[in-house]
Image (tube, rainbow, N blue to C red; front, side, top):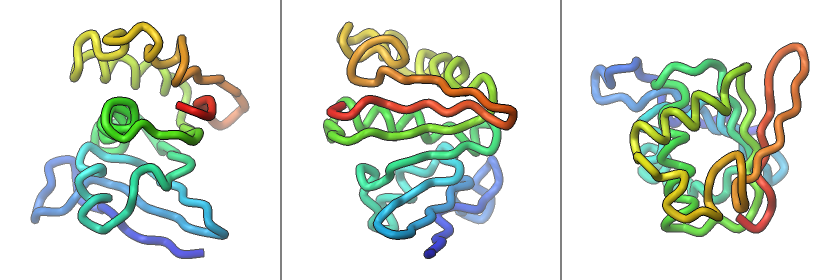
Length: 143
């Protein structure tokens, strides 16, 4: 298994460091643990194609740990047209917090095209599976 530190800075980018984001690679699978607000820029800086990531696991819902997911999803739907499923795992409330953050950053962004409303319609129809530790969200294929 390969672990790459994409970002390990604090919430304020002290010292020019990127927010928390770790890339785990094993057997062709790529998983992000946390996706802080600066993570999309950091991934690109380190030559990591965001479309190659199959799962994002969020440790908690502070902006410096999940804020970059907004931009990752926005790029996937508007610019890159991601074609494979992305699994998002996080603590209880992840779906609601993500939707609220997206609406705050991009008002109407979930409904710019009625077929693109996250959590409700294709392409990001997310299923929520709960267990004692966390909730997992997964997109459909062909997003």
